[in-house]
Length: 151
Image (cartoon, rainbow, N blue to C red; front, side, top):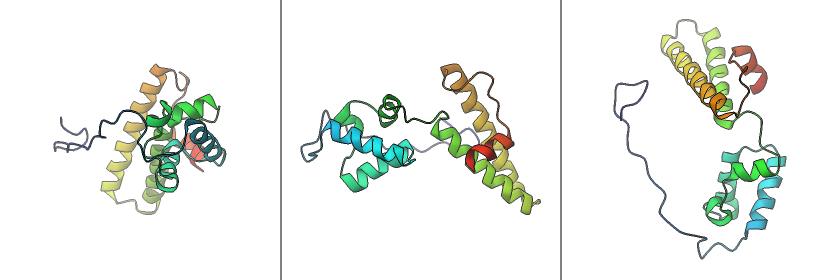
């Protein structure tokens, strides 16, 4: 399948190995992982940051293998999941950075195109999240909203 904004074909990605259940070398249980996720979420970490911390500091390769739930699902159960999804917030931060760059470098046309592509991706994600009921139906993307959410 081809990429959306490039004229090239995509590269195949890696897949996780099919491992059932908890690996033998992991000695943490489900309750401890849930507590760790809760404490990291209180500190303001996103679900992807929590996954990296669990992997690097606690030696937990995949929280879903042990708990049976995704990190974001555990955060939702603990009422610590943000109202805006993480991926759309990261794209908004990227758009704000590109807009700041464009104010200083008006003739940078490649970054202008990059800004248009990022904003199109934000709108597509917003359309998807509206259909799924994650964000409200009247939510609309604007650069002012993005700056307020990011900063």
